[in-house]
Length: 135
Image (cartoon, rainbow, N blue to C red):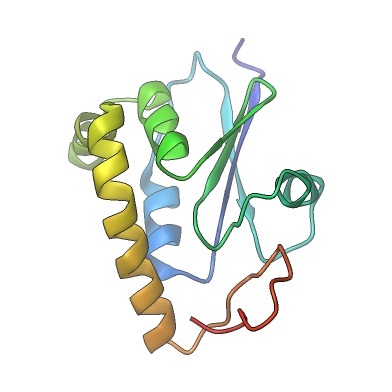
């Protein structure tokens, strides 16, 4: 099972998202985590878009052929995460509970959106919604 590739699709231009994704560690027995920048064209982003998932509103975890979105993604990630280091232990504690993930994720997304607005970043807008280019 260690050869399973796990994809985490997120906005690499968000410094908070980028730091989180680079710090999170998954258990070796689960597979290998590959970080995917949602601002670059990829097969997984095309699948996310085809399913109608707005990448500006949530990261996506691809695990064993299933896509987890937003709070579900961060919850699933916590379930497969290692417990080494303070950050990873806190991450597992916070997000292994689906209820805590559902409460915390929108708050974290709001902070992300504010940071990106202050930095002058554009939305990814993978769903091509008119008028949704800026935060």
